[in-house]
Length: 280
Image (cartoon, rainbow, N blue to C red; front, side):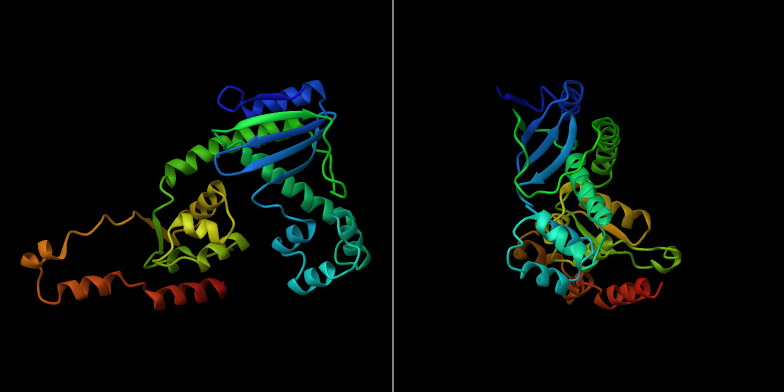
């Protein structure tokens, strides 16, 4: 019989402890406000995980991590008969793009990121169905739950700190005016480069996250790193402007034009910043 409940009454930590201590085999489905996740277990070990909003195949995981080029990825997809992750993984190894251990390492990382994400979900329902296995052809691993629970608990604390630092995802981001003095020894990650490429006055944080397929935790973490390095700053959403008729009596001639000009994106500064980062 399936075990059902609510995350407010039974936390993910308690669920994983139950699976671990009872050495359960089956599928834990967690449905949050915006997504659904599935964790698969075998005798108390986490062996697979997936998000309904991001049903990534092995090829997509390797492509997004930079381990496969777009050309290699398309070549693998075009191969007849390769319909499962196991089949694609075998082809990757046979073509010597990667070793089996490298593939498993990326699969483990993908599964862990999904598991850690779930620790930040405060609302949702869960259902554990015993003896349900991952889809046929999926690559499985074996991950001990004790370490996942410890790291997940640390992530909860990090999540709370990130929410305090960046509480409003409707806020905007801009580059600081004088970043050069703080840019020594800065090595940007792939995720940071992706976020930087979408920073402009039209994109708030929520939109930047959507363009990069990042969840709330991921976008906050990347932005916090950029904030700490002094490369960007957060700007609160501007309140609605007063009606034009109410502004006219106090407006100086040309003041409105000057205000608009001041709010325009400093495109030259942004380009110089990106060139400076690339040159590090």
